[in-house]
Structures are given as C-alpha cells and as structure tokens.
Amino acid sequence: MDDVHPIAEVLSKASGGDFPAVDGGWQRVAPWRDGVEGVVAFTGHAYLAVDDDVSDGTLGSLGPDGFGGASNPRLVSRLAGDGWIDALDIVLVARGLGGEPALVPRSDLRNHPRAEHATSVRSEVATFGYAAPDDRTLVTLSTGLGGMLEVGVETDPAKHHVGTDVVRDALTLVDEGAVVVAACAPGNARALRAFLGAGFEPVASVQLWRPER
Image 1 (cartoon, rainbow, N blue to C red):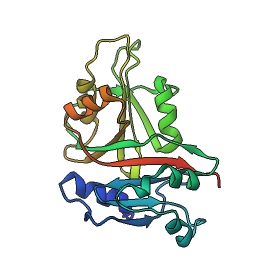
Image 2: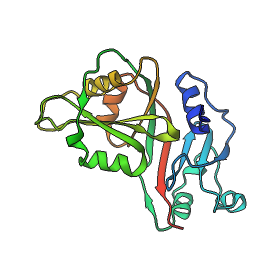
Image 3: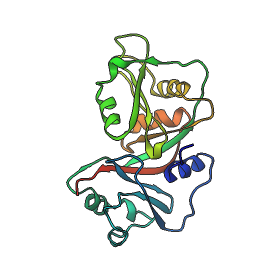
Image 4: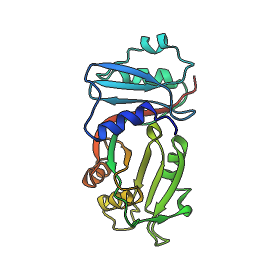
C-alpha cells in the first residue's frame, strides 16, 4: 500500500474535526506531484511542500509561520521564481454520496479550460457531465491536493443548473463516505456558496505554484 502523503493525512483528519495544533508552527513536506509545490495553511499551523533544491535554511529565512507567514506573497514569489503562481484558494472537504451516479463520462470535455487547468496541476484527470451532448457543464475528478481525490465544477451558463445541485451530483461519483477535497477562490462567492450548500466544509487554504528557480 502506498504511503499517505502528510497533506492527505492532515486533511483527512480535518474532515473529521481533528485539526493541527494552533501553535504558529510550520512543517516542511515533500511535494505530492512533480513540478508542483504549494502551501497549505490551517488555523495557526502551515505545511510547505517544497522540493529539496531549496535548503531548510533558505526556507526558514523567508519567515514562514502558521499565522499567515507561510502564505506571505513575498515568500510564495521567492519560491516560485519565474514560474506560474495560482490564486490563494479555500480548501473544502466533503464525503462521497455513492449510489447511482448522476453524471456520465464526457471525454468530449477534455479541452474545456477548467479541465486543462486541472491537468496542469493534478493527475489522472477524468471529465464528467450531464448526458445531453449540448450541455457543457463540467465536473473533473482527479488525484489532486496531497494525492487526494479532488473535484472541480463549472456549470454551463447556457443551462439552468443550480450550482449546489451540480456539486451534489458530483459527490455521487465518489464512494460513499470517502473524503474528497475541492479548492475555491474566496472571491468566487457563487461557487463557494454552491460547495457549502452541497455539504462541503472549509478547513484550510492552499496556494500552488510551478517553480522556475
């Protein structure tokens, strides 16, 4: 059995209400995906997933801490170098509903911008949607944050789907009781309300980058 990544372990515990100590501390962990690094911050404790070409001394000199320092834009910019930096997102967790899937595989949506974005930072991305071929509503399931199952959703503006319903339908693709994560920009209030309405709970923040140091 493969080892569970520390980020997956702590997020899984958080889904059950067991959070890291609020001690202002931070921990260094290995990246969970080649070419992608990031910081996952909880209340009063943070995790930095950074490759070993950055020494412990250099990392510590950047001033990370569990009270916001690990997510400081200057720190993130220094570690990313000339590479791409993602937005700071809220991390939400939920549990799968299982049962009869409400969505079907949609390989024709592989070129959807959200699917392409998921492929750039996650692995084993699968695309799903509704059966009607003219419905561009997209749900992605992938190996994402910390190697956990991660879901992404975008509704088709030409259809009249309720976002909460789409997110809830996405949870039917996940085994009953299995933990799934999602990342949502704080300013995307419509999407955030949809995830919260479908039973997701916020537990942390995450910011990813693809370093070019």
